[in-house]
Image (cartoon, rainbow over all chains, first blue to last red; front, side, top):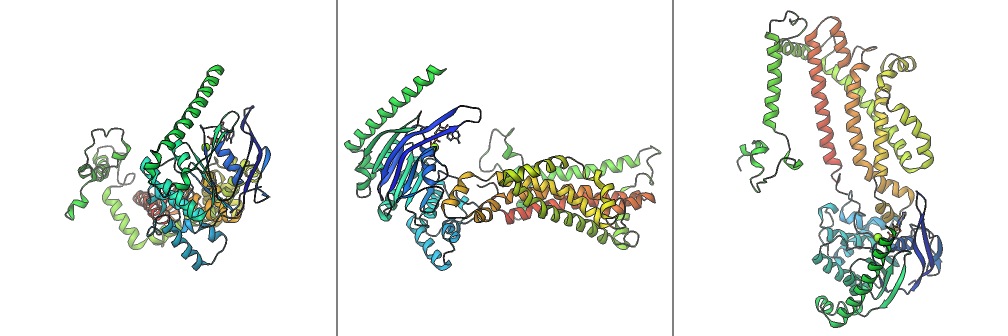
Length: 268
Length: 285
Ligand SMILES: Nc1ncnc2c1ncn2[C@@H]1O[C@H](COP(=O)(O)OP(=O)(O)O)[C@@H](O)[C@H]1O
Ligand SMILES: [Mg+2]
């Protein structure tokens, strides 16, 4: 198990027409293995940028990211990624999608087949292996994406608004699945979301991020995810503790929005 | 459901479930109408017949063959062929040239298009060649090609290759550039190497575009072919037209034109069929 360490990360995008955007400024944190961190914040506060740097798709302007002491310089299979949508391979069946990682690693075919079958039943897709991915609903497609990511047994799973395109009901079910996977596999997960409720329910740690420049505004340690599977999710989300935290976060975010609006008003 | 109802024109049946009140401007409601297409074809033959029965002395059996003459000419072609070559052999000669031109175009064009979609340097190198030669009508090159590749098969197949290759380059490049960044990223995070990304992500992602390119190229090649067969060969539907025109056999010219049109339609139908079978994921990404 490897800990993740993000040190004084800065990211400046140079714009083609001149000028620049400071997408991240001095972002630092340590994440012990096996924790579930949720990132919450208005669009443009650098959540995707942060995730892409940890995934190794982007090199930061300054600072560094290390996983288990090794610094990250490019993509690697110890860091799996789940996107909002559109990242499944539509020319492959569900099984082929899940088997993609092992196949790229030239794993034994029979072992891969067993693994794929197990993973499909873990995410609740037993019997769907031979379907084309475009025949599945959005929620089922995200189940495939989770299974595909797990097939390579990564240390860290990065999810960029994985449930953002789903309807409210499917979303609740998928939140349960993510919690279950987290508790069963003990993986480190970083999950980006726009939903305050989702960030509170899933996060065992939570960062509220703020834009211009993108930074971590506030940190929380949360109890809900650890209990999440043992109690009824609706009851938990209706509990006074949960509601108090939700209102606290909402007013914090509202405050930030007001500042942004005020800032933009002053510019125009 | 009776057997017959399956053949009823779509227009009658389709709104049985939900009757839309807004259909004008709704693309999903415009599917064509087989019965009107049949009527239109019949009308075309009627116009042909009607022109023939007019009093204009310029329109006689020599300059403007009748339906009957063309019908007879078709069976003459089927039975004994033209200039000792059977109709099927003429047709096959043309098809084979087009096929060869297309295959060479795909074999050269797809890798070049991929290179242009994957590397700045190769894009820079190929851009001037592609952009300069793409707008040139293939026939403008026929004199040069005859000198370079001989008057026979060489110049014809090369000309068709020229007609196909730029289309394939552009199609393959578009296919590569159309790949969603998150698919490539996902593949890297799953441990794929560059080569594996090319083989298992970029290529299948580009196949629908490549196939569309092949359909377009096939049509363009077929259209270029007749002119390419103008000289240097005694076989092919184009050659048949020009030989027949020398002997003023306008009936054979007319039949050849119809055959060329029908084969063009048939080839497109075959390509569409193959597309549905081979690339069912088209447009589903
Ligand atoms: N490739 C890019 N080029 C220039 N600016 C970018 C680029 N990607 C993101 N940005 C800018 O960086 C900021 C953070 O973006 P992003 O990380 O996507 O935020 P989030 O995911 O939180 O919405 C935004 O202001 C965005 O406009
Ligand atoms: Mg984002």
